[in-house]
Image 1 (tube, rainbow, N blue to C red):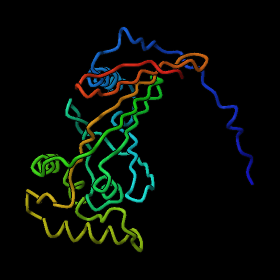
Image 2: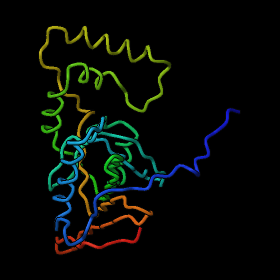
Image 3: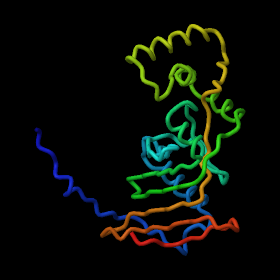
Image 4: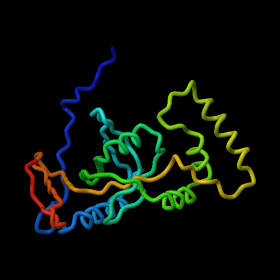
Length: 217
């Protein structure tokens, strides 16, 4: 067996800015926006990449990376095939967790909340902003289903290319669209020296206000 690096010795002493409770935004959406804009200004390949964790009806937990495509104070939106495993989880339990990790800034944001489908018209509007190849790919893929080999996808894609040749608008599929995660809790994590990291948790109170608490790292 090849020699394996001793991962116990992998360490990084974070040197970064401070996340102070008194200076943090009162609203977690505003705090997220500030950090997200700073991530956009940094040299990340996919600053909008986030880990999406779901739980099935039987309690099985899964996670995967997806791309954030919109956010405002109503929630965080991403798109997927509604027949996929993650979509089946979301439609069964209506809960999810998101995690953003911006390593160059030593920052993490965790979000938990309940989930809803966005309106079909909004999904169709976004679908038609995607590159034509991505639109055809969404139609060609039966996401999460077992296939014999890659040629199955290639043949399905070619058939769709022929079918829609010369047709400017490709119909938005009913089996594809967006979900919105509506947060009930945020946690903002800022890496600090000596593992004494900053952690601020925002919890939604019944009044609709956000309670902010500092957590021990």
